[in-house]
Length: 202
Image (tube, one colour):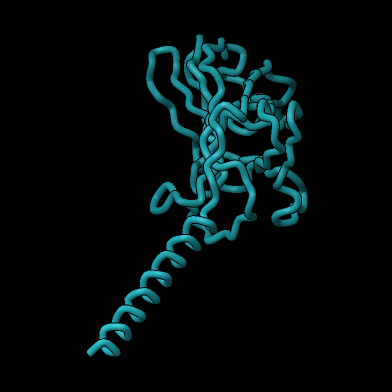
């Protein structure tokens, strides 16, 4: 009887060890979320140049700055980023002068980060403490009304996002990326000079 009891106790002990080990492995392989205060994003919008249209130009300059004491990694936009179809999300929220939210046109020509990007090397940007990375994006939507537009940019990378707002392209992302969401301050910008801007026939 004692032998059976000792055998059952040993089996229970091994089962407990296996359970704890499995839980430890799950926790240790899960990447930690980044400090939301570590990544600062500033946004500047310029006036149109010759032959620029609001649905294809890239007049919005974004600056990502690492405010932490550790090196962090972010990603440049890839196809689908501006429509929140693939991560990282580069979502520019805009409301017209009447307060109506205007969504990006999926048929707009969205610029790619480089001519022949190599995955993932050409997309990953390492930011040492205090360093910045600058990139440009566009409105990617027509602007019908003259006046002041409410604008805010948001960057998101989260490997746990699933479903319609998760990664829809089946991409394997590199480890060590900054996880979370960072947003610029809300700006109200007069975009009257962009309204009606059309490409010349010359």
